[in-house]
Length: 425
Image 1 (cartoon, rainbow, N blue to C red):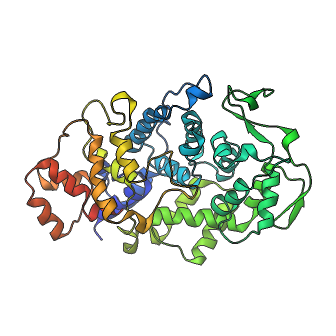
Image 2 (cartoon, one colour; image 1 turned 30 degrees about the vertical axis):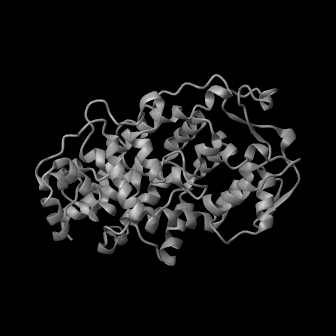
Image 3 (cartoon, rainbow, N blue to C red; image 1 turned 90 degrees about the vertical axis):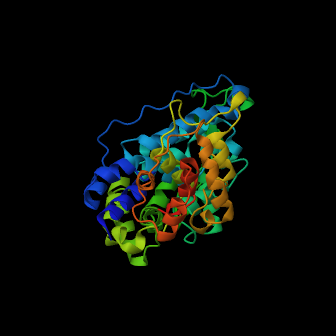
């Protein structure tokens, strides 16, 4: 396989877009890996988002639009490539939806928690997310008390966030739910805020709501609280293997063998759940640059959007994220039709992937992403120049013929966006 193909493959998998300028300037796949994993550039300054004054003011959904545009912008041009890839990965792994949380500010605070820990330590991220106010709302943690147990978080933290399906029983769900009792949010203007001394829009532990009896989780007995229960889950081999295997699939694009999962899981757990060394271990495997891993993973709508704006940056004024009167349009409208709006996953299992991203609906509505441009963008007139902007190194003769027959640059841009080669990473 040609060097340029493998360089483009590295950037597609270790960042959120094709990175055409980097593909053009990078000599080898090894150089591309080193560049993609480089975190020496300063971290981003987060978008400004003042805390709402009360619950009514907090429920204005349009408040999420400017920070969504900021996030897409970071995916587009951040020099910290792997940070953006992992921020999206953990956002999907710990899926939390604005549809239920209903407070954009809480979703933004969760995003900052994920971004801060994206390349750091999974155990730290897990503990912070488990008491995160948005997650407490989404998985009913604020209604989980010794007097009225809610098992939603207890189930999902094992099935989705740590162990994966299989190595636990229904009674383990009950016991983790009991250990997770006692956490509430301080929401200004709500009756439950009375008597709480933590800052507004943060969570706190209320001992009177905690089930202080002994619990038995995965065969271990103790008076576990939330951190104690998470510690039991982190001590189980299945957690390291489940997370390592999921990250392998995201980066390599194929299912790992059982032996590979065991090796990566052991390394992940032995490192104390350090994330970046796990990424390095995955890209060091021959699997990562193998021909069978290139161009086999369907590209998500968010990746298509980021690639589009990297290829043909919007004119001055940025993305068309908000329409007149604050109504969603552009970025939000197109991604909504495709079922892929950041901060709004379809369910707790996260966003669709694999074959669910390929079909007539996805093909037709991928062209809706062009609504990101508030006016006609400057498209390279030469076909080879346009393909290079998408880092499409080797397109089929059939695709090239279709594109060559279209004289209008804007329509040709739409055809590239819908091409089979751009449908995969």
